[in-house]
Amino acid sequence: MRITLLGTGTSVGIPMIGCACETCKSTDPRDKRLRTACHIEAGNLSIIIDTGPDFRQQMLRANVRHLDAVLWTHHHFDHIMGLDDLRPYFFDCKAPIPCFAHPKSANVLRSIFPYIWGKRKAYPGTLKLNPADTPFGIKSRYDKPDTINVTPIEILHGRMPINGYRIGNFAYLTDVSHIPEAEYRKLKNLDLLVLNALRPTKHPRHFSINEAKNVAMRIRANQTVFVHMSHQVLHSRESTLLTGSMALGYDGMVLETT
Image (tube, rainbow, N blue to C red; front, side, top):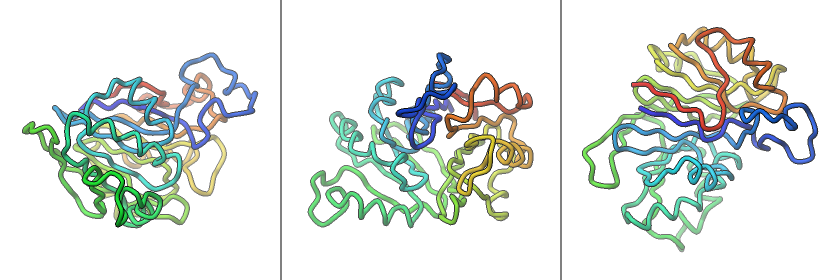
């Protein structure tokens, strides 16, 4: 698998509007962060995790030409509001795009976008929304033979249950503040873990950097990459405080795993 980090920033992005802190003023390209999302290539399959408000820009920058499935971690604005920009992926393939989300997030998505999933659909037959609470498979929309299995990981974003996902030996967990004990069993023997690490100080709904490091040491993936970082994280400074198997992610970072 080839994983591209499309964005590694928080809900406001970096630089943040109106801010003149050292990270927002930084000339280091690793400190320019769009909203957190990633693209997964597995054989001929093309999968997106989250479609935030920067989705169109991210797809153009990464030159993603086709799409087989969308996975949503949860229904907050910075993870879903680029959804309408999925429409160009129907221009050369009319098969519906399968979309997956935690059952509670799926219900919210239906209420936010009634013109897609309501009784009077503006785009009938385009996006098929599926609750993701048990393992499921993804196959090609383009009649390719490729298929892949996905295991949802139910985690907590504050008090709200959301989904992370495991695909092969890769797991993607963002906006998490707590991993239930039962879910740790699904995170064994990882080659690559992508995990949120908001800032050096604590937050009620996100892991801090130290909390994320502790979780990474417990999961013991061969490589852990941190994402969803605020403007309190200056890449050149915080990256020097990490061990050899941990790294800060950055927009456009490409990772490979099985």
